[in-house]
Image (cartoon, rainbow, N blue to C red; front, side):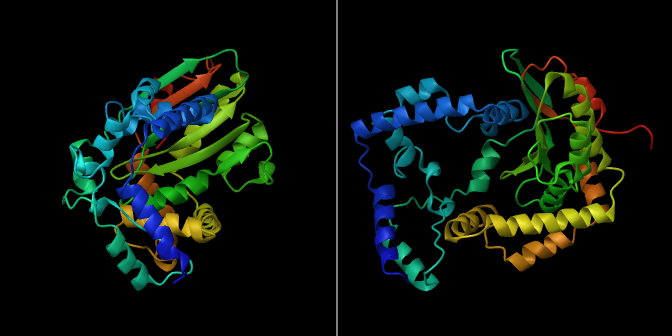
Length: 352
């Protein structure tokens, strides 16, 4: 094992277990968070997804933003942090030893690393509460709804439409990843242009009805969001909404094996490109340990992806899309965006 790893672990354990929470540093960090909040609010894409979660999971923890309201940030003090952070004070469920993962990748020897972690991380709470039990206390309940913020001072409209998706451990989560690849993404600077493999991307590119669009599939502990985010000119919103809903709902009825094979290969390629380097590998290991409880080898993950075929896609689409409620968030000059009932009506076809 690299000689610097024990030193790094010692520093990390000291930071996490012996923090002093000096008032000057807390004040400085408050200012940093407030600046970050202003930057996020200036990025409409981030705002769209914050509002999408707020309306889709209203009155549940997933409906709240990561940073929270500015009023809370401005009043955070030493005692607030100690109450939430310290494993022995008031809220031990926040930092429990069974909700932690210490990960290393690269020049490390597993056995030596484990022993070093056992030696250094000794002050964590031994409360047996699991993450699943915490989620069960406040489950994320999906609500079909919408939030729209009209702003005629900006040139482009942005919106996202989503269905309730799958949790990380749901057997159909892999199929939704393949479906996301089938819907694809597109922007005006895309190399493939109008010749993308995705039929949705082809519709958007050929008809020039959007500046950009992308399918998304977000997984959480007990639920998820599956849908499409798009940016377009105000006079293109009706055609764009029709294209998006048509292609998503089509997954319930008409899916070609060739499209599924293309999406599977594209998904595997993107996964390999994403996990390149020690930091992404460590992040991936930590996420898998927290979500699955174990490390999933590439061979197993790719085998699960290859097991998805056209019939699987249609079955999963019928589970998550067919006649299901949707959540919508929209910002900008959105007068031309169809109403909620229009979107809800297009979650199924009457021709079959």
